[in-house]
Image (cartoon, rainbow, N blue to C red; front, side, top):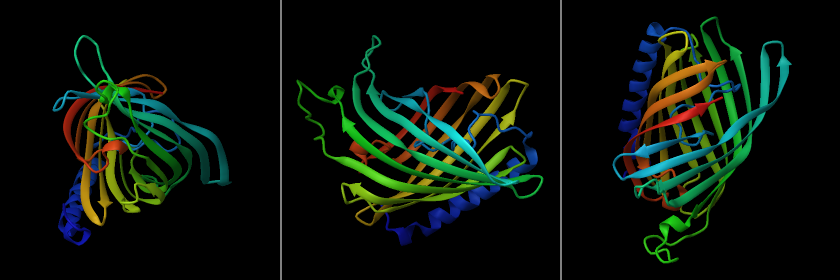
Length: 282
């Protein structure tokens, strides 16, 4: 664990890496950013996005089950070239344990709900800029699959709750690769040990293989602080998207995660795993 000032070199290396990959992608990928029909497409590798799918973690025999959706409710034209989309997000992130014979006790569940707004505008013929703001609540709970004889012995439950605003600024090049930066502000949080600002940056993109087959990829990096001690969180996702109709279809992916757990009941613990899974895109 490092204090924020000691994280400067790591941040610089990550930024340089993102810039290099983005530059290569801009000049090499076929124009196509297929993955759903939302006004602001979810950040591919960001764990806190609405998904329908599951992922098996090889390292610890766990599964993650994501159930939920993000919906665009209304689009307002602020000007002829500046549309505003208003929507909502409702989803759960659930961790299960594999015990064989199709038995998967549920250990913990995180509940996310909120509203979002997004604008986008063509900066030139090859670059589209966009901004998304989300205001949301998230809470986390231990479930009976983590108990033994109805007693939580490995971890005691506690109140985990956050109300926050998250802003993301993105630039998409030639409808192929997008890089972004953002900041989350926690205005209310339990436990209070969590630091209130969470910076974030990353990239994602898509490469067309055939008329209905795409390679999709993304990398997301955040800095989490607990009692002013900061650590980086790395999340990667890459997979093959089979489009069935109008950007809808199936996504088979590989996942990599390292850093503070995405599940609130374990927010001060480290998670490191590789995984594979699928998502339903619509």
